[in-house]
Length: 149
Image (tube, rainbow, N blue to C red; front, top):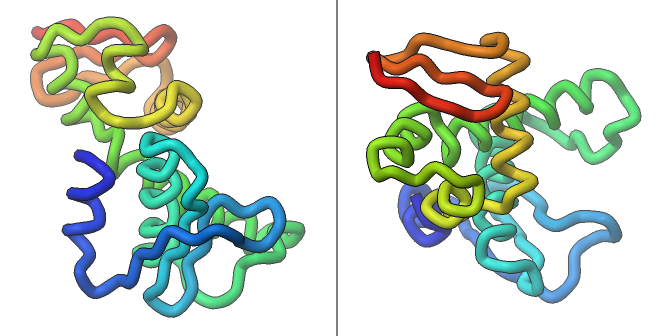
């Protein structure tokens, strides 16, 4: 899934790339509007957009103060939603079937940054443990490796 195809899935959202955002933010969701730092790379924008759509799908209200436990949990919920949207288990299987084995090849195919891919894998490892049997594959998360069964 590309940045553009992710945008196309949400025609009810206004998604704009902007020059300035509040300090420290790469993206912002508010009332069906997503703002993304236009100076980021395309892969970074894709990752940022997934998380901001995660806020649209999973959270509510102003959670900009992440010093509270409630808001931090909602931030993590949106981030995890983004991981599962653009680095889904199905997409990892697709990469395997296309013979993409290196981190660089997987990142290029999924159009995500290496850091985002690693964070996604850590999320799956936390959720499922070191491995998971899924749709006829054994998926290992440390390091990422798939075996068709």
